[in-house]
Image (cartoon, rainbow, N blue to C red; front, side):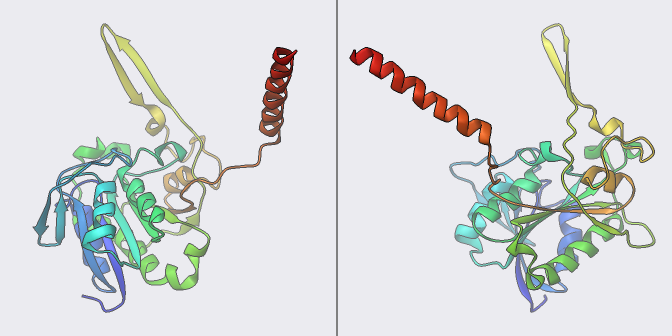
Length: 272
C-alpha cells in the first residue's frame, strides 16, 4: 500500500466489478485505500438511504448490503471516519449532464461525502453505443487504464493544489483507454434532457434518447459541456458543489413582496 493520503473507495456497480478493482489497483500505489462498496449492483439508486444495512468483510475492505450513499455514511461515520478523499468508481458507463446528478449512484456517493465536508471524485467511463448495452458490455481491466490514470493523478495532486477549496466534488468522465492518454477538458454539465415515454396498453415504456446522438459530428451539446468533450474523445472534469447553491432571483423577491402585501390587505379588510 501507499503511504500517502487516506482514500475511501466506493462505487455503485458492486464491490466485485472490474471498475472498482482497476481503480483500487491504481490508487494503492499512491494512497492508503479502504473500500466500502455495495455488495450488489446499486446503479441509478441516487442518494437513497436505508435505515440499517448489513456489512461483511471483503478482500478489498467491506461489502455493504445497501446503496452507495449507505456505504459513504457507514464508512465516514463508523468504518473509516477520517479519509482525506472519497473516490467513487470507476462506473461502467458515463455520468454526463445535469439530469444525472441526482440519479447516479456514483455521483451520489461523492455528493454524500461532500455533505460530510470530505472532498470527492466521481469517476465514470463512457462506453460507445456500438459496444452494446452498458450493463452487458464485456470490459477488460486494461480498458479502465485511462480512468485509473486520471483518478490516481487527481487523488495525488488535487488536494494540495487547492481544487477542493472551490469545489465539493469532481465529476470525471473518461473514454475507454487508448494507446495514448486522452487530453483533459474542464467542463460544465450539459443541460440537454431527452427522456421519453410511450404507452403500450397498460404499460408505459421509459427511454433515455440522449445516447442516440453521441456522434461527435452532429452532437447538439455545445462546446464546454461534459457530453461534447467525451463524445469527441476527451476526458471531462466538471468541478461541482454540494449542496447546490441558490441563485439571486429579483422576480421571485418581487413575488414574495406581493404575497405579503396581498395578505396584509386581506387582514386589513377583515378587521374593517
